[in-house]
Length: 115
Length: 111
Image (cartoon, rainbow over all chains, first blue to last red; front, side):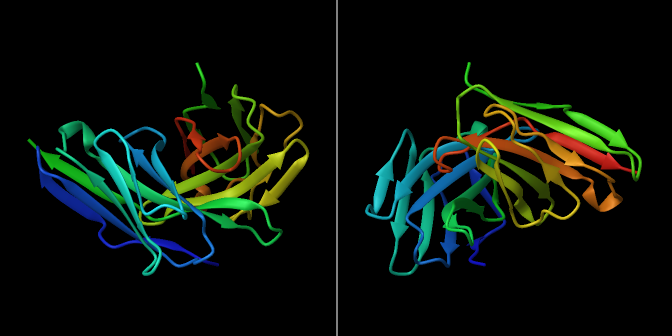
């Protein structure tokens, strides 16, 4: 089936820097994308989402960019803090064989923020 | 408080001994699903349910069963666990299979 992937497994940044986490997707029919954050010992938590009719969406300190031409998604975190250290997953809302919507996850990028 | 509750948090068992991991959500979500998370493989979907009495296989359903008799509960059943089912399991729910709410996870070890 279609898959969602990540370019880098680990990203190390200094506190206060901006972080950019990238994600490539292969299903051109996907119309909804989500970023999740997973802290150690916890379940993934929703951060931000974007629909395919948008190129950019901003939240609090986070921005998601969608480039449909090259099927690329990125998560930008401004002024990265130690509390941002976690694994970040991108996910797309894909389609099961019966037509049902199911989310498909990338493998994740580990963000390490150094004080 | 809106949440997805999984139990138990940790479970150690032996090969072949049937077990059930419970999952309950209090958000009246129609969509529920189970994932396993293994190092280097990310989250892989085991089973999902679009509504009561409607379940379907995900990417890795072998060795697992589920049931959805009520909207709030979606237990994961391992009839005869094997060591390759040692993993971290997550239950999740959502309104339209979009933004997922995850439980805290169940770390299962099968000896």
